[in-house]
Length: 242
Ligand code: G3P
Ligand code: MG
Image 1 (cartoon, protein in one colour):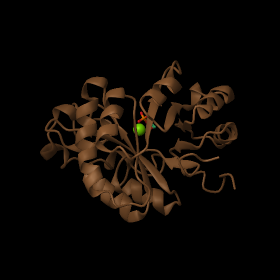
Image 2: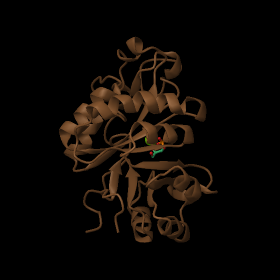
Image 3: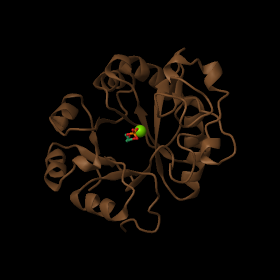
Image 4: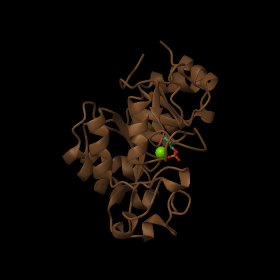
């Protein structure tokens, strides 16, 4: 049973196997290939602008160098985030541009607030003050973070938007922490999941989402355990459950 009304597959960073990650071209490609929802990562530039970007460093996915957090928007906006992938040049999107394109495409979106605990509140505040004012899509965005400080701030800035706690290396007290933060779900590394853990989380009323799942046999097993959606770099377009 679906708790959050999500499709079984959410495109990871847009659709990272098919298009440059976290770019407007990537969101368009996800739509073209039939996905209904995408995930993106948001971080702040040195001057506090929320941009759609995954790594700490600019080097892997752009023609820039150094830390995003040390680089102002006026520099970031001129970087090329697609040539490394063999695609025509694409900018690093500002969150405002990304949300405009995504809502225009009719896609749903999971906004991952990517920050450590120290930067979590400021990142969530900047991202959500912007997103709440301009989002015009049908379903409200799903917000997520590894940082509890970001989720607490998200609850203040966008109290009606659902939130998910991201879990990485350890399961630990994940379900209890998610409940204490008022989260609707847990977004876990799929390698942490077992049938029993998914059941336990669901018994607490939490939706379980799993990242990053790029094999259809693994996705089928997770769906079978009650995982509501998998984040994937692939679409599994012809292989989803009916
Ligand atoms: O939100 C799910 C997933 O994106 C978390 O990991 O590192 O790919 O942002 P990462
Ligand atoms: Mg992410």
